[in-house]
Amino acid sequence: MSSERSITVAELVEGLGLTVFTPDADFDRRIATMDINRPGLALAGYLRYHPADRIQLLGRTELSFLTGMDSREQALRVFAFCSYEQTPCVVVARGEAPPPSLLLEAQARRLPILGTSMVTTRAASVISQFLEERLAPETMIHGVLVDVYGIGILITGSSGIGKSETALELVKRGHRLVADDAVIIRQVSDNTLVGTAPPLLQYLIEIRGLGVLNAMTLFGAGAVRTHKKVAMVIHLEAWRDDVAYDRLGLDEEKVKILDTELPSITVPVRPGRNLAVIVEVAAMNYRLKAMGYHAARTFTEQLREAIEGQQR
Image (cartoon, rainbow, N blue to C red; front, side, top):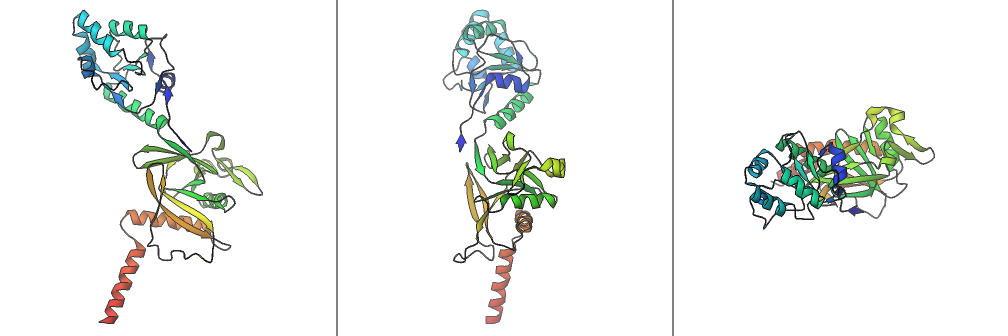
């Protein structure tokens, strides 16, 4: 389940504590893109490729350029700049006051004019980060997300296979729970997925026979965290004798979540297997691979050299 996200200008104002210069504007205008535009070319009169659907950020350069025009030219440029209905809002940086001509035209078109005391580059960074968090594509996955040795591991599998019990054992062993049963995963950049718990399920874990438990209350604040980058997926499935499971670890599976591929391991489940230990070792092995050491490939290469040595 994924969704295209947007927020209102009112949410931007509340989230960043921005100053409002046009209180009667339309604050229900929606922001659907993470990009920000500094409209120097638009104020110079070149509007052919003007990205009007973005937040328009005015810094000292744009304001000095605008106020340096004569009143007639300034009015014409501001009229054209404010004429786009899809423009969500204009943000003025450095604590500067917007020019009267801009305020007058914006009020006539109910275009929100906002302000911030931050310098322009800092304002662009803060607004971009806020939009990335709020507008990132997201999906909800049935599973458990845990932080094991600093590695975010998403445990998936059919209902009743033992995902929550494995997470509970990992928490007892000193690792941290992020989400149980439902995991909201957001794509915050091209190759980065971040998982969180739905607000109603935060810190909760369901164990059949015991019911719903609060991991933070039981094990302390160090046993949970609110979000974690997802690094790999471990899929639990019931052991089947007719399946030839990988015994060397040479087969590297991938699973695609949103637009990002993650390494995936399928772990067969049967009585007597300590799944928590397997997940711990999988996390440590992932870190070793990231450092350039691949145990299965090393073993295979040594085995090949031994066989070739005997044949000589």
